[in-house]
Image 1: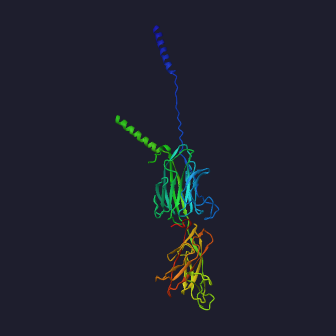
Image 2: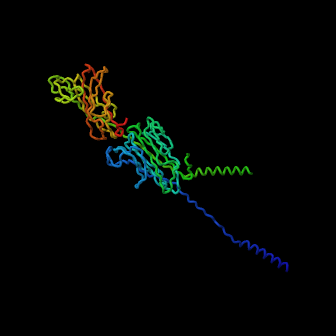
Length: 243
Length: 220
């Protein structure tokens, strides 16, 4: 009888020990992470130094729209960038620009269409443009490239990197672009106030300008086209320009 | 075992590097330009000549020839030129579109049966039918360039014998500015056959009238 009681006691103790194991309290902690990425998004706005006057005949005097006779320079005025330079005493040609939303997936307009009308040798038209950072990540200008030139629909891929303050002469008959004025050059381009490495912070636009000069050998009644591509990339991935 | 570890480490770094390259965010902007050039173009619209009357009759006639003093000097009685009593010489003029661009750029003047002291004059109208203002820069008469008036008469040796055969006095409008579409301006010149002109010869001369875009006027 005593043996039986010992066996029962041992059984109770064993079961009790097992009972403690089942009752162990526990709690799991979780770390949930959310990464909200920013956006690289840039757009353009633009200003002309010689907009086309409406309602005036070619050759007429038109206050404020007299033809520029030099590249001049742009500075910020109360109403935005304003052009400073000498003008002729006539209004013959004009330079106009239009913003185009060429990338519907992003905000703003990504393309400026520049049109110079009724140009003649020694006409200078200048367009100032703002690069607006519409995203949330600072960007830097990674490259500025004259990609294409054409004359009357004969197109040339040129891919010439543009440097600030340098004049590039274009012979659109041969697709030649260089930094010296040669016989046969039709027009020239000069990039102002904008260079590779320029940083554009959200909400703080940076401006640059493109000056178009019609050269002596430009053909009458011709149509010349050019395309400049500016690539902006997140600021920390753009290598500083080499000295 | 150590070697495998090193290989894995190198692989990891290489992939990391690739990851950085792929991850760069960028967006291109485009500036597309079109330059439409204008056209410098002008034309001669009308022309008239003082004496276009061919004989006969030589005499009497209601359309006698004209004459003048050498060098087109002023005569207190007759003025700069005056009529004779016979109709002997005469002139013709024709407007020509020499480059087939649809407007007349050449004025051909022919004097017939001319003789020493014969005088004739031409007047013509020019207009700017292009899109760029122009200024009449100069008249080039037998390689003599005239930039302004009054100018001295230009004597021309048409035959190359060392003697001038014809003299021409350019009238006006050098330096005049023509706006696109403006009314035409009248230009004239006088012609005088000189004493050394050969008989029975065709005397040819050329006058070029040079118009330049207004903003290049006065430049070399």
